[in-house]
Image (cartoon, rainbow, N blue to C red):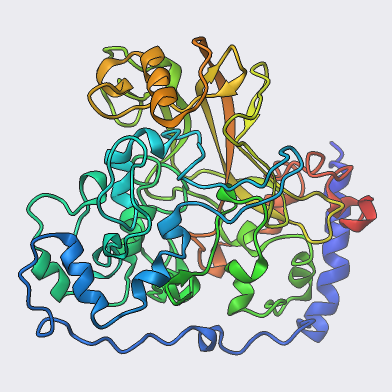
Length: 480
């Protein structure tokens, strides 16, 4: 008779040792499960209907904001202190720069559309302000009337157009009469379409979340959560900071499952022991892009050819793409911070992938947990004379999307933004890590033991720092 693999026999033994006492005595929780997580949700403010308050007419969107400020005097001042306005972090001290640096869309790059500074016309349709323009200065951050109140509060289907202004033909009076507390629609218009299209960037944020099924997202589908139920807001400061635009994140500024749920929420103590080393998201978000596909790779080097445009495979202005659905996350140790974030001017080694960001954590870091990420891989332009990544001017009459001339696009960046360019360029591979925190599925769909342990495991235990599957010999801290 063919012998069974030794690990199966060991697994059966472990299950019997654990299961028999449970069958006799029943499950034993190490911490009483929190009775009602919903009790910790913020109260929704009672909204004042504005249809009889707003009069108009308005000759500009700034006139709408001035009307808002006549009652909400501090609102614009609050907004102007947030990263929704600045698109830039507070200054950080790093180990590889002598001076403090800031990070954000206002001054750095990613490996999707590369640089918001190269495309004020389109990128700023997701900025909470009016009146952007090409060049420097592109925007006056000091003018309170440039704050766009409608983008977060109008419930009329309000849409922003070029340079952050309302789309042509927008009825400003009608939009202003519908203002209310932000909904998923308000947040999703920008956050579901980051990176150039629906679900392109994050993989766990798509237009499917406007009206999701309970199976897709238990919070927004089954319980009809607003974004602000988790991303709690005070004085227009929205809780929750993304690690891709920061080096360190204060835990007080971050959203956590334990804002509502107990630290050991399971009635089965074996599951609660996992919370020391495994993030809730790892088990409860089995897949990303469960309905709308997400972009996995992007090759800028093939752009500029007349191959026929197809949004999911090739666009002349952007190159080749690879989209996927039901994407299994990449699992790494994560403590909430970054070990590294590429800053404009940093040197790269073009012979190996450049990490645009590198989440911090390891098996030896007691604050880190195994966490799910989407990894987006791109091939993007770099300066082969200086060995630095480049940020092209893409939009406008002289931009790359009009001329398909890379050299000219980099010269324009040097002229308009002051980024050095040697006159030589090529393309290099880059990686970018995006934490997966949405698409939490019902408990019955969570990962099971066999998903992570035994043959066919979705976890690479050795890459995580273990000598092998910890079920075979012990746990995390035994690995040290």
